[in-house]
Image (cartoon, rainbow, N blue to C red; front, side, top):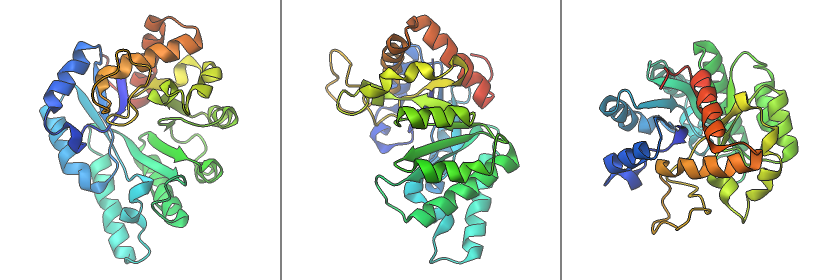
Length: 270
């Protein structure tokens, strides 16, 4: 399996990161893509890539919660130009396989809408310029999200990471040629299981799986872990739930998501 989205630089892993990685490998996770969400994380993520050169790859981006890094209206254009140059240099690294996590989040609204949109548009442009896929976040912002990407057309590959949307939103993303990342959100009976009714609409060659650890611990795990921290070793539980909803064998689901991930991110075979 390939975990296409894990926040491995998160401080909750600082005391046992090597153990977490080893447990995930024992559970069948063969590759991890470490999510870059802020310029401030680059050095920590780069250090992980050096420590695990064959196991890890990364994305490089600015999450909408940190959008002022690229679009702070109180700072000069020169500052924004420098920040974007830093992001570009990071994204060009051969161990970085996508631009992002970037997008729009109107649920938390930690940043002004216009700031989020400007930050997102800059990263769309960067993705096109350097010809690397776009790793996207969207929550309660579907229309603006689609409007931002409309100009790019199919010039870039887009994955909607941690998809949590409606059936109509899924159909719009698929019609636009986007790929879909599924997390333990679908294992949460309080808010995500409705997605199981239409998850089979995602073609095999557009579907990927991810933990988004340490967030979104699958609530279907039995027995339940003593900690609420999600880990990459639980990726198989997400695969199991998704496979049942799609009426596929677990082996088939793992095969198709692995192949899709390899192709989307341009990863070497595992």
